[in-house]
Length: 343
Ligand SMILES: O=P(O)(O)OC[C@@]1(O)O[C@H](CO)[C@@H](O)[C@@H]1O
Image (cartoon, rainbow, N blue to C red; front, side):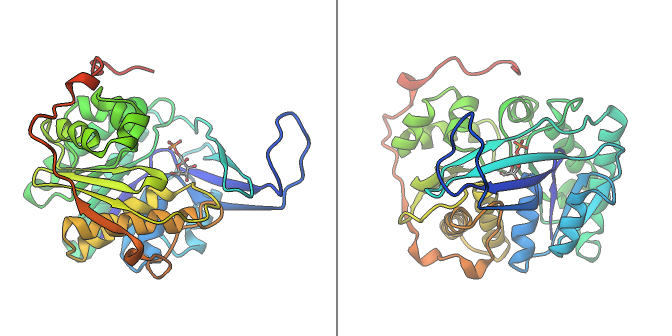
């Protein structure tokens, strides 16, 4: 059983344009769709779609459209009722796969609601699997207004204190202040899933472009996180595939190009692919392979459509081990590493 926490879920509304987006013009949509969204929600949807048990924990009223969407997709969830409606995020897709996304802040979550959400999460992790705690807990996405930027660290500490040696492994996928807050308050996730921009931001090593172009530099950046207690780094690089870096080794996965229809949810699908391979006992390179296969399949589907395992093609993914020369330290690419949370 894999539990996900989405503190700032959304109803994802996707507008498919028949042509190129023109700023300032009135344009007619070719199609419109909506899906329950938010990063943890998407991971739960992807796992459920592939037959892996998952429960999404999230705030939101019983009658919120996000809950209705989860019910109709057959995804198990535990919700903390709140008075305000959840946010709607808008995606505009163009025929060539260009995706424009507008994410809004979401309803605020006050201190007592945050506490209640953590209790609900602990109960959900404990109740899963007929009494055994969940095997993984995924903390993913942005935080709503009012949430403490170190919320993911608070949750990680609470879960490990509560479950001790049987605590679920923790995966974190976030960006900006919540990601910096988690790392600076020693969340030490077992798995961190940054993209190149986030990896550059949290390590102060290289830029998004430099890390995407140079896997050895990306490994150096990821190793600086492993030295700070992160278990493994799954760095997603969009069409360029992904890297997996652990204390034991580093692997690169590449794939042939796919015709992208909407990249929304591709990173979440990659994380789900990694986790479902991991819980089925795959070695690190196999988990990376499935992560990239899932991400590619998600990008080829419209809106926030989540692929099933059967829609993925891991055999199209090439995985190679990366050897990092002993004299590469990344020092020449190092900027001032972040020392405080910034807005
Ligand atoms: O605003 P956040 O929480 O960073 O991201 C939210 C979001 O963009 O992430 C998912 C795709 O990864 C979407 O379902 C959702 O709209």
